[in-house]
Length: 403
Image 1 (cartoon, helix red, strand yellow):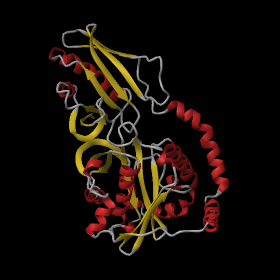
Image 2 (cartoon, rainbow, N blue to C red):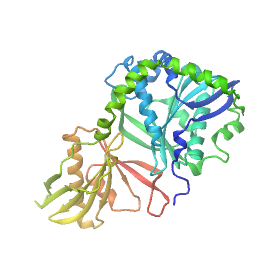
Image 3 (cartoon, rainbow, N blue to C red):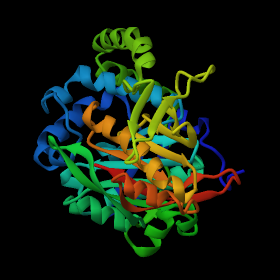
């Protein structure tokens, strides 16, 4: 079994982290609420020039992406993901006022990993608030959710985010080419990461207090039942219940259709080509009798001149399709295996118009890099503790990509 517990239902409950005293201000995190909309929108519109160049591209305008209906739909989507243990969305509060957001999303329960994202009101930047908010979230991920690995993709050129990753104790593992579309175009991203075994004793917040970045942990103010009830009523009123009901009805009525389509790609049942010796090479989709609706992986059985070479597994659940190579180690089959791999990659590029396909290779499978390189993939780095092996231990993987 893995050394840490799997992600549990703690991700589904109301979360309150802190407060911690930073430069004389109380910094705390809590689960994002519908009533955060007005403050969230005001900050995001004011800081558009700072945020948009590094934010995920969209066909919607910045104003449309910060409308109340958009906020409600995103809140419902995040709540669904939190209930499934696949995301945690938190609001950053400074002296009780909204000052940004932190998220662990997506969470990969199978490999005990998550991606950390954070944005902050520019008026609060540079005072240690973001560093402490990231530390609170990281400690929560490692200690409460049982994560082993937390990553942060940073757009090349985003120096404030790069500095935050360094201050958060992360290490640079790879530079991913055309990894994400931000600001309207595909951009290269650095991948920063930290694993639980590298965390300081007592956690990151304790280390920040010892270093002087934060002053101390302080007790959360206790409130009476009547006060909490009044706060909930104000939250309901601020959330505009009529708008919530309207958008929620549309969202949940469309949920079964969205759930059925998922991230499925229109991949063919079979692909065919010939090697340089005119020998036939085929990829045939493995049709499982039992297929989960959540299973986004597709397995192709590879043969060359009717000789089995193994499998290529394409996982479409993520920002980019990710390949797993289960191919024969026989050196005599390297060219044929590379031809089969290139055939599948060419299809995703030419027919599906995908910018990037990734492959995670087991460093112990020393024959796979030659196949990947011959198929046109490029090695981008080593991901520390990114996969749980059959032995129940966390193993490193090499990140390769075709672009």
